[in-house]
Image (cartoon, rainbow, N blue to C red; front, side, top):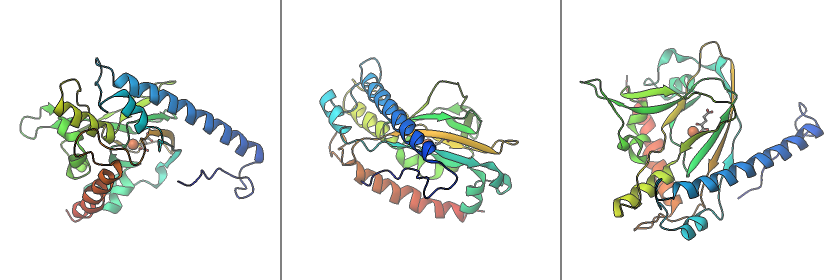
Length: 256
Ligand SMILES: O=C(O)CCC(=O)C(=O)O
Ligand SMILES: [Fe+2]
């Protein structure tokens, strides 16, 4: 993997040497704190009174994160460029103008998200039954197969704003954890399934800018799923990208 491209005052005139140094130092410190917190969270999730051993045992779980591909991002949303008029079922172009980030699930085990407190982040609470209007919190809504395809733009999804609590992270569970817990729970009752949070960012009227810092806690790229056929992670990601994101969006965009 390539090394980080840190901000450099020689190529970024709006910054100074001191600012770039401080950014490097603070970002590295924050990254380490997130990595450590997520390691502790993984162990908690593996305990019998939580999800149970979704990666078979603690040695396998430690190994799976030895060459972690975790990532810290810095996102700026400029809401003045958004145009919600087209709605999100029209075309890919209008979808891009409606969302800060389109509905998606994070990969990896979990995400620690901190924001500037501006609203806009929403999670999928469940699906609304078209005839009874009852809300169903359906685990299948959160499977890789479903979410990457049609359901993410469906009117049946019930969206709920995620409140901001100063000093607290927002935690999303990811698709690797979903898959591992699903596989392990189908083979043994000592593990429970869980959801990979479907979420999106929508612009809030009257807000111009929004900033967020997502930390994505990711295993080694070549980690194997715990249960047969022991698929390596990158194979799953490739299949998921080819079958969902790449092919399904153009199909959606031709709908009226
Ligand atoms: O900016 C946010 O609040 C959410 C960011 C997010 O979902 C992501 O980067 O995956
Ligand atoms: Fe996300």
